Length: 227
Length: 247
Image 1 (cartoon, rainbow over the protein chains, first blue to last red):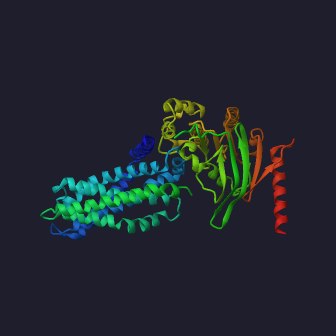
Image 2: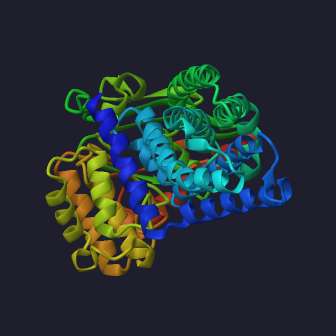
Image 3: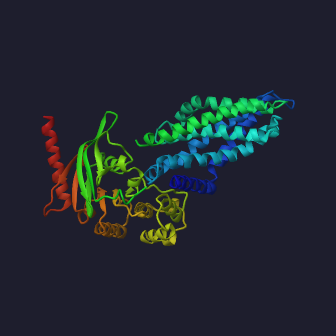
């Protein structure tokens, strides 16, 4: 087990070094997410008053779109020199490679959310941090649910010619429950009187999705990646 | 993981076939290689050489047939077996955004090489890249990348080394240095399978050669003639046999 996490850590560190050097994925993902939020802000905020409950939906749509872009670009890097094959050849359980890539994408999305949540909060007058613990739990579980499926599909599609089209086509139908749970849970927290029991319900549901998705991904990664 | 337990001194490819959709890339291939042997895998473009190396390296699963490493199959030995394999593919498996040293350190840690920093410095010296160790690989020539990729494949001292066109992009001196390096590996009991079109270099290097043509493997006979002549004869014999089967 120690070796499993060592390999995952080595991959995370490598991804971080490569990204730190270029900041290519971070900047493009941030630019895309901020543009998306600004377009919604121009459409849905009239005379300084945002549409009720819009903030939760916009936050999660921006996370999902930005996440899809980040997933595609992350695996594009591994495709350019076929380095994903080198990772598959490593003397470690292949799911460790999946965990390493997933952790890297979670870190990246965490950084994007760090900017996105305050931005949506300010533009849509949404008190995301009225219940910071629950908000953090929703973001963590929702992002993990989305990224766990996304990492598996992005790795699977790395050599497919139409991967840019196929990734959202495969990813969104499966992660719609995660996005809906994220939206409903966030909406319960940002209403005038935060509904904690409702937020707890959605966090529990997201945790359930996370367990199912991560387990399935760990189970299927090796056979799917052995061509 | 017990890499020592899954060490091996022979590799046996038995009746291995591989299809991609309706296209058959390999048809009932049989080959045995022993420790201390360099086997040349020759054949025209699209003959199935890279597919065979992919299967032996465990990256591809055969449609039918088995590959055994000593007494174990890849499925039995799992990740421990991969610690004994080294692959230099057509793509070099290097990160252009990282320096030569960072690339080697990454793979050394991935393969749990003991004392990775020392191993990396040794590998950089072998690749004649010590003075360019901190330069990004993106700025390297093909030959420099090729030398670095070879050291990447050898970093964990694999028992079986699979080389797909290892002489691509190498200048004359580097090509000869690689031949000497491979001869040294043979002396230390490694199994080396080299897929190449460079018959002149392979002639003085390989212990025996096999021809892969249309997914079928045949031995290239020994004898006093050069490898190029024996290769041509083997291709002609295979072509005649194919025509006989068709008619």
